Image (cartoon, rainbow, N blue to C red; front, side):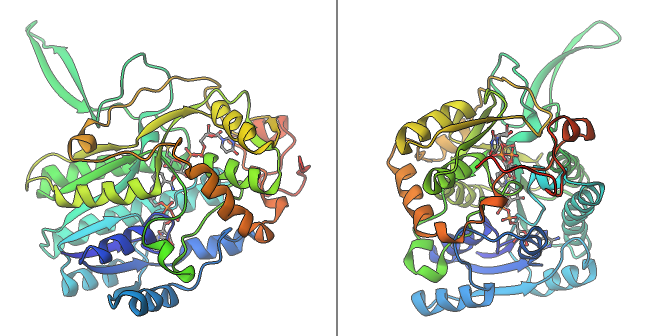
Length: 406
Ligand code: NAD
Ligand code: USQ
């Protein structure tokens, strides 16, 4: 297949591009490199040293003889360029990672809220709009989030995208139908993923676009089979308070002896998936596209759920690093249960990588190797969800009045 990977320079996009190229597909990365600019804005860098995208693809070619092509295009701003590129290249499938993906970054200031909505909603809409305009029947595989469902305890398993409901009609009859699971976003970022869902539903219904939306949990780990092949193929690994996600942050904190940053009492339960499983799931989704004019195909792309304090305790026991119970900068339920269905990927042959398989220690070792690159001042999460929370926890979203916990 000829595959366009929108956002292929990012944390999930890069290993996915390598995996698909290795499997024999023709891979084209389209990226505006905004994530690298955001590192500069925040004054942070990936724990792992990343080469330029051109250098990464050169090394991949030298190692494997396979080419990954790179195209510098902004999906949100360069509509005409994107449309022309799609019309010329006519990929069979398009994987859409190209969005601002950090909830804390999206809540930082009013400017960051605007940026996240403008970037994410326009990127998705421009892509769908262009496909219709140039009459291209490419399968779109979008990386969505488990966060569209929200994190309130419902006492029932979360289905894969659609909820069966019974309705009593005006004439008193009972009818059953499936609706998109009610969205309940917990941040501006998660809200943009809910808006994406409506765009997908409309374009599938109106124009018959073939779309798969992967409601992904928190991705942990950094290496995949392909990124391990050469030091310069290494994946990015975020640890800072905006882009670092909880489990990867705890592992890096364990490596540098930084008290594990649990928000509140750590009762938040979240869904997780290892990066290697994430790229496998994307391949499975690519190989199983929906029919034309079918409704949007939705998978829950996660393999297990964990409570934040249980993760912290596990890593604290493993490393001897203590736990810091911090005021929560987010507005979220202090405790929630979470049961999620992921039957569809299991039925397609996914064999989940779980937390107990020695991988945690391997990641701590990687983090120790690059610990000299960590700026400890960038570890605390300083972006507060509301002005009240910012005042209460004595934090300035830009980090100016922050007292370090280390
Ligand atoms: P990332 O920030 O590392 O990568 C996103 C890539 O998209 C970056 O290379 C960035 O430069 C590019 N990009 C952003 N806006 C763009 C635009 N307008 N035009 C072109 N390129 C653009 O993020 P990631 O962790 O790789 O996540 C990829 C996708 O998966 C995101 O959509 C995210 O919402 C979703 N996701 C990620 C996780 C996770 O834990 N990392 C979990 C669930 C879902
Ligand atoms: N948390 C801590 N300590 C930390 C960091 C986070 O206790 O140092 C807590 C948060 O308060 C939250 C939970 O851990 O309750 C998860 O936070 P996170 O930053 O790991 O994950 P989240 O903000 O939800 O976002 C990440 C990705 C996003 C993706 C989402 C999937 O950045 O792109 O969509 O995970 S999900 O969580 O399933 O919605």
